[in-house]
Image (cartoon, rainbow, N blue to C red; front, top):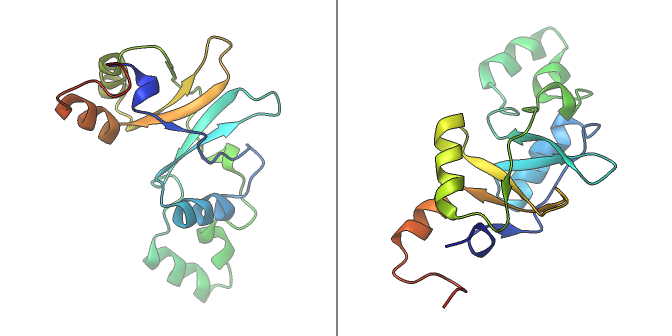
Length: 142
């Protein structure tokens, strides 16, 4: 089973200069927990997860009382400040098992999928790997 058959193709992406508040909005709108961060050259330079942009309600209340609520919501803060980098990737033609092993060893729950030129092709998550392991037949390979 290859990564290409289990990944989510054409994922929503952000750039390092995207505001954190916008990244959070995109995650909510598209119902995703991870966004690859792509540079101007099209190469993946980082990953941002819902944990990176989570808002702590108690912190929002505390900062709101001081008139600084924008700090907690990420207003004006850029993705490059909170993204995970360097980013670990997996090749589009690698086995799903390789992606799963890498996620386990690196303690991440998603990997950007890249082609031979290291251009982004998709994202594979631990859920995708679990679904692949439960599949009786390889999808798209039979």
